[in-house]
Image (tube, rainbow, N blue to C red):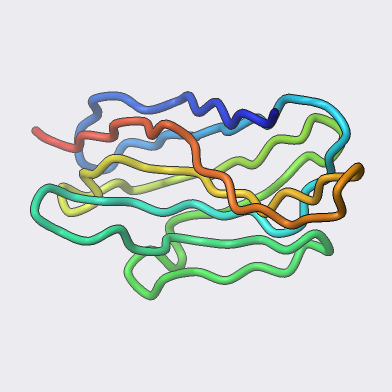
Length: 121
């Protein structure tokens, strides 16, 4: 019913910047909190940043000051602007959204398919 489609990943050099996007599509839904998570090879999936429906944000200490999470509610889209990228930022990045279904009234956690970010010289 609801799909999250991510874009914006790629291969970049240290110090470069990327903006990741994730758009939700479907019908009869609204979105509460949204967030970005990442998983590096051999590591668990960790939180990068979250943003509430009211715009309150939280960031992991490892990215604070280098990334900005934002959302466009009219487009059902969340963004992650990443600056001054480092090799340790290399991971698959996943978007997450808490979806409220209007018909059932249920709150369901959805995940995107992931987009690869590789930072290497």
